[in-house]
Amino acid sequence: MFKEIEFNSQRTNCRGRIYEPSSKNSNGAGVVLAHGFCGTMDTGLFPYAEAFAKAGFHALVFDYRGFGLSDGTPRQYVSVPRQKRDWARAIYKIRSHADVDAGRIGLWGISFSGGHVIHMAYKDPTIRAVVAQVPAIDPILSMNIGNYERGLKKTLEIQQQVFTRMKDRLFFKKPEMMLAAPRNDNDLAVLGAKEAQIYPKLGGPSWRNELHPDSFITGKLDENNASLLTDDLTVPMLVQMGKDDRVVSNEAIGNFPRRCGPLAKLTSYDAGHFTMLQDTAARKNAIQEAIAFYKEHLIL
Image (cartoon, rainbow, N blue to C red; front, top):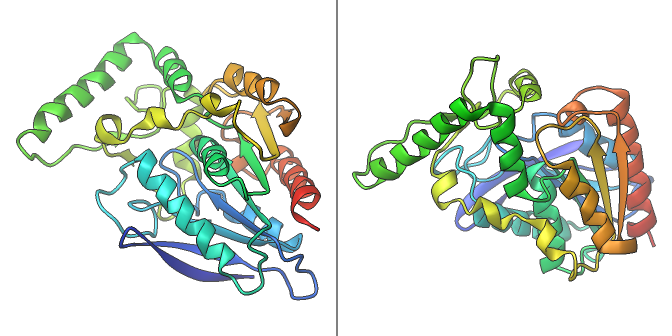
């Protein structure tokens, strides 16, 4: 069902898989998928790519530089400009496939990459369809929610970790990794919501529960703000919201399609932020909804 692939992004190899439909089932369209904050493709994305391939699409799923199976340093460093470049190269890779129509490409993103896919469609209006699942539409609001969920004491400790790293950078000291997701109520982690405790349990073999602190200093996380693009988008979008999500801002998610008008369709699920990465009825329904959306917009 899939082939291991790699592609070059700024002289660094990104690795992934292309899930391919049978020749008789292929519809000639392609979908590109990547994970959210600190995510890797083996952390819940393979079932999506496999389902899209069974529905007739060529589905390319990949790891960003510095994460999972991809090369690149520093490791566990979230940089919005770097990840956008990786997206661009992945899109070029699927468009170069002999059995894919380069003019019929869709994007799929979850959480932080839910913002990426909207930005990529803004930059490349030839993208035909976007699915953004529990997306971090406004990373500033999502950060504020995390601060609230984490509590003042732990939030000040997180800030102190970043301030310490800012000083250590001046002396070229090796960074101390931050915990990405909490494993219990006592952990100090970047993701502040209690529901994020499920994330380490879902992590695949290549996933690491770490975040490079420079992500907050040079990663330009605020540039992944899709809420600023609503007046200039031209691509059809499906936005899937989890009603019980405490990781990203559902207010921002709800406002986004209202401001985009008929271009954006909003659906909601009885789900938290990580429900769609588990074998649940919500995930099955979200996959089928995405497939129907891609068929509507990618098949001639």
